[in-house]
Length: 250
Image 1 (tube, one colour):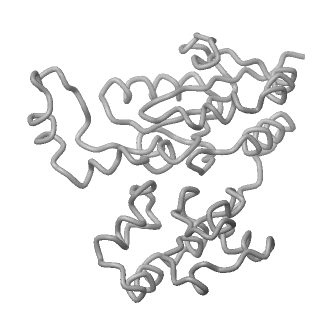
Image 2 (image 1 turned 135 degrees about the vertical axis):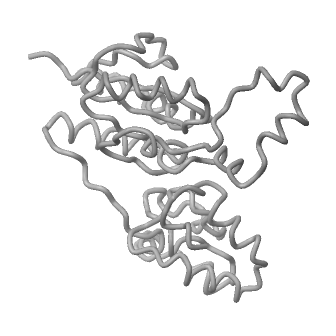
């Protein structure tokens, strides 16, 4: 019986989510025992047009070339899974959607006529059908392993959209929002990071994106009551996941 064929593609991003694969180390070798990696440039495998069972895609769509390439990848893939903030909600590069990007291009580049970009940076799902989204900035190796194992058993992995606050409570971390008055994004951010920042007394900055039942508008008002100016409140929501629909109301 042939192994499922898997590809890992990159668009506008920092490569952090691809490193989640590479950082698996020996576990990545074990993973290749149950799937066949046919395209993954960062691992030295180049077959971008291969027909695959699963395509993992990192990065957002920001150029006409990106748009053509993601359309082709969708056509060549039975399942398309976006990985990380850039692919699921635009990432930091989508912040240019709030500025005059053409004016920046004119000001920065000596020959702006050679710069080709879309008017807006978009998540992958705004352009093609996406079968599963793995949130995080970056995602974790555990997400990769759980997803591949579930898929090879004919199922989609369970999506954990609980809040970071739940992780803090389970691990008995002191709530930095209550005890220190820090503008922690934990109440509106999905778990998965292990509450890394609150565990060392720092506020969560929302790297894993919106949790389920996110009352973003109400929480924005809470942040304002802590003394944050409106532009700083918006920055908290827009920094990484500006194109997440759950955060639009802020």
